[in-house]
Amino acid sequence: MDHETLSVKAEPYKLRMYGEGAMLDPYRDTEEEPGMFATLVVCLPTEHEGGEVHVTHDSKTLVFSTGPTSAVNASYVAW
Image (tube, rainbow, N blue to C red):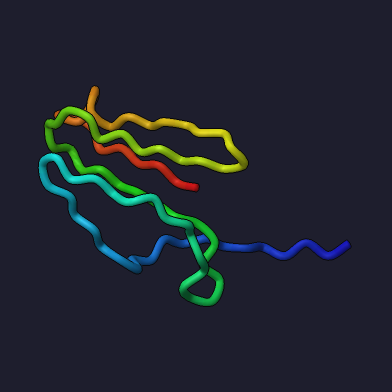
């Protein structure tokens, strides 16, 4: 069996910035560009509370919180 070396790179597609109290409406990921297969959320080091990202698949939900280390660390979530 031939094994190819595959490379993955992150390319900006959309930039969304949310201010205090902002909420993102639930949405479904769709391939917008050829080869697109994931979503990457990056939270830059800015002190804040909240900042939870809820990811749901097949009735299972995971919650990622960016607030606790926001003052000193960047955080990211990919799915």
